[in-house]
Image (tube, rainbow, N blue to C red; front, side, top):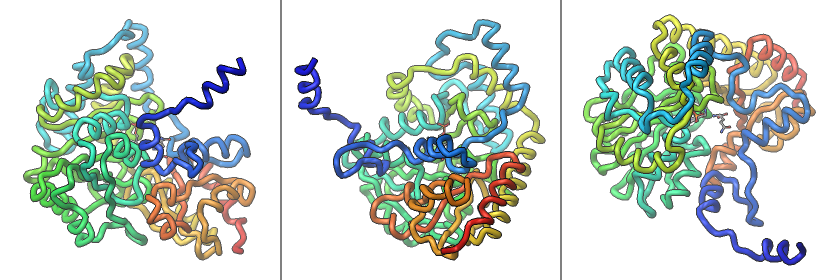
Length: 409
Ligand code: PMP
Ligand code: GLN
């Protein structure tokens, strides 16, 4: 027993894990790996009983017809491996969705791939399409998976900062970062964690730069149906974009079903085939009975999609008022689940420390924006916190009342 423990301790655990953890900012100096900020803050909320406005997940289930369709699929025996690209009924529904909302004609047989959430779509895409040493550009702050996956693929991560108050990129800074070394530009629009929605001009520049430097665009559009008063523009609808763009989305946000992990991507057939070569050895397939249920969801009438945006906008407004009243300086997001609040006016300059203490100070959990930053940007974003408003209005009001008791220091 003793011997085996010693042997375990002396064994070197090499491999890609270190690059993944480092890319997501989770590798500590002593070589240990921290849990993701979402897991850490959800655990803190569970431990303290604080209201969890940290991890972005809704507190209500998605549409009853979609839930019922999954139950029915299980009863009907849709319980074995689906086809590698996804069930035809879902592939066809995704194609209809792209046509209905964006006028995109996508071939369900060759230009769409169903994945285990947007996360697997991102993983398979990055691993399939970059070589070690290639540069990958993202905006900053960035969703943690991008850093981890670029690290796993051996890529070099370059970023363009999004700064308060509107979190739009400086276009010259974008021009300066993209070069012939850039293999991939990852765009997240609407953006997590800032809630920014990019205007057409920015998207056009991304397409222009991708052409000039022969880069692939990967666009993470999981919040596509959650924009407020401003239309979502998929990059692949812009002239010249489709041929070099991988468009990624998932059911999690659109149907409030984050635990089902049904995602998808669309791209030209040659690119989908390359991504499939990797995806089939990650999960192979997933979510057999959920796939036909999401197909039902994607075919819901326009009114469903309009209602989720207007409901989410109402929730945004409740939390925005609460945060302002509490003394935070906020940027009102144009999309997504999230609002960024600057704690500087309250006298807190270290958002990570404030997030750890917020349960005790106010009975609320948030996540620090610095957790979405590469090391060189953490100090600049330190006073910023991300609050999720994808919660019942009564809970947001309760959180607002608690935050109002936060005294400046
Ligand atoms: N991209 C972004 C920007 C996200 O916020 C999330 C988290 N929901 C994901 C990807 C992951 O999506 P999924 O749960 O479908 O894997
Ligand atoms: N996308 C969710 C968020 O940003 C979290 C997903 C996760 O925990 N990986 O809060």
